Length: 171
Image (tube, rainbow, N blue to C red; front, side, top):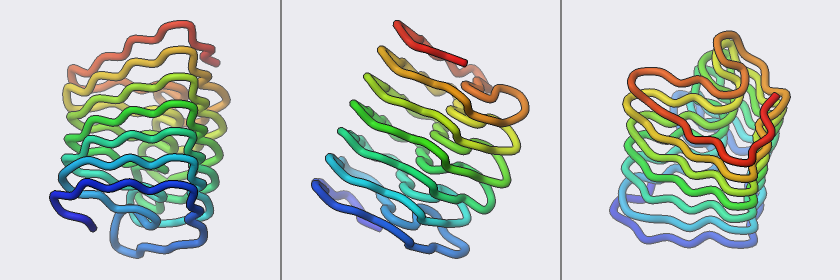
């Protein structure tokens, strides 16, 4: 966990990490801002946020692949609380959880997707993207496809949250 940080991670691979009884097995961010680019985050597992967990962070993901991560409890591959997250050219696919949201979970935050793919994620509820707690999401030129989960397999919107989708493929 990195407190009040400014962080840049580039050209890295995070694979096979475990965070039992914790969040964000590969990357855990708390406070500050971070840029992650040209990275692969795959095959990781945690109780929550199988790949990346962020709390009160301004996070930019550019050309990042989150693939095949497991969250045993909930909050899939990317777990965001009170954070602002921008994803450009990212692929979030084939992540799984036994609970809520296989792909991207946002609570009381902002999510921006541009030219991303969110596909093949699996959860008990809300497979692809799950918004709650007055969160706002926007997606442009993004594919949200083939995610599985009861009550909103592609995009789930709860508790006064909203999503704006423009030039996207949903299915």
